[in-house]
Amino acid sequence: MKFFKIVFLGVLLLLSTSFSNSHPIKLTSSLIQIFPEDNVLMVECRVFIDDFTFSMNDTFTKDFNASELSPEHIRGMEKYFERYYKIIINNEIYALTYISSEVFEKQNVLSIKFLKKVPTIKKGDQICIKNTLFFEDFGYLQSNKMTVRIPPFISEKYFEVTSLDKPITLNLE
Image (cartoon, rainbow, N blue to C red; front, side):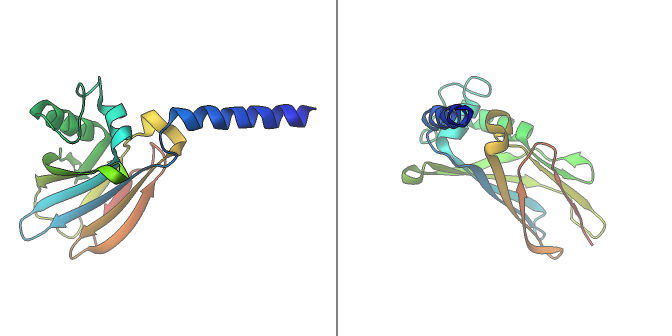
């Protein structure tokens, strides 16, 4: 009898969470790249539109619409990324500046591009990436995948962040 109660509660929990979220996958995908010839940091981040809208609304902006971005929405996105996606070079935080975005409606995906002028990257520098997007909203269900390119130091390296307390630290050799 105890077994059936546990199974029943498990099924009930599963059903209640499946209707509250429109999709079961909670992840972001990012490309972080430094262009040494221009000293420019580029971040392209792909998020699910409904998750991003849920996280943005009321705290960072009102009535967020990924297909029709207003100046208020763009400021809200920059503030959101300033809080949850930090790029730190030699202990200095570089806030990202919105450049463009593209909506992939069928896939429910928003691709957002940011640029930031940074100092010349050299041997011995340290870069720290703190990507905590959506962890406050989705907790352990969230996963943030990142590809990092920092020529000539890192041609391409992959990372996955699955909790709030796991920043990525890169010591350039």
